[in-house]
Image (cartoon, rainbow, N blue to C red):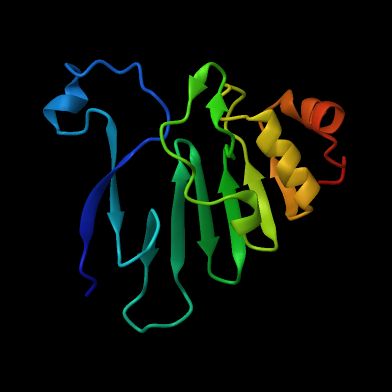
Length: 156
């Protein structure tokens, strides 16, 4: 089996979460608990026992952004945020990856909602300019914004 390590990482942005909350009772006040299998960044590798290419590789980039690499070279990027600010909040730590560090092809960018810490205009522009994203999966109402404000092609 795999040896598992649990480590804590700063979430990347200042948190308004009070230290007396229920999370502090679990030892998670201003940190995100993460499980890793030998990695250099905030990553989780989940390998099957046979050692085949059927593995899932997760890279926590910061706050709401995660790169998910699935078997068959299929990649998903969630809520991309590579900027130093999320609205008025300054990032405490840089993201673990930049847009340039992403795979050459990102199959899907998944945006969960339009809060400033999950939908970052400058990060979207970087991704559009990189021409790495094949498809965008967004909630109702964001398709027009992506096409009109960020220049995403309607086919994507």
